Length: 242
Image (cartoon, rainbow, N blue to C red; front, side):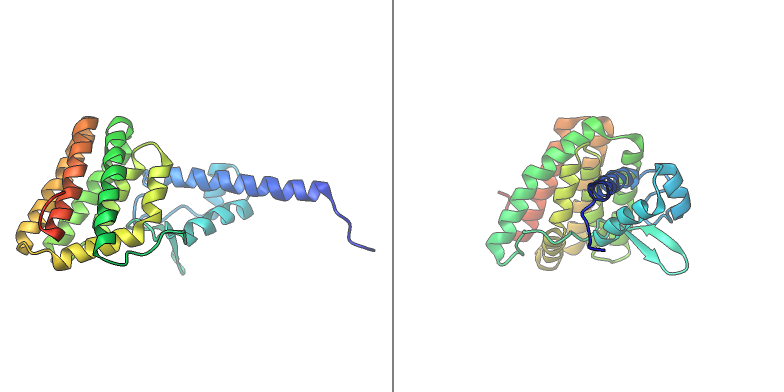
């Protein structure tokens, strides 16, 4: 019998794909909340599918997408876990940083994006998101104190702020720019001319100022603190603020 086109089969496939997109968005909203914090072991597929009201095949599509983005990872024999820091970006049309001018332009671009993200986070963050920001800042401080470059912890703090701003496109932008962010932070750590202890103290104080302004709900102060922090990064790398 020849193959025939079935409209109902096509509609079912499209509906399932749309449902998978919704489940993906629902899971994104769960990440960072109690039970889904960084390093946390996620509930099993059966529990998650029941919680979200979808079949396990649909759930697996959404989980696979999160794994591809680096937001979660599977540990054989142990289950699925939330990634500790901000995930690697999906392949997008963002060029790598090729020279010093690129790095400076990138840092200046972050001023606009992350300054506004911090202001929005001060207005819209939840208690759970505030807790996540605080934990990321504490992990960063601890990593520096232990002698680490703390690049991943630094990235995670900035991503936590973006996640708290109430607009997923801020977080999506941070995810897309993650490789450039990691590179610029690492370069700043290795090339900045100020003594290591002084640089470490400056960055810790700047992160704490961002956190405090967001906690107080002061959007203007949060924007100012984030911009001061990023301008400090430019200063530490290039020797003077813009």
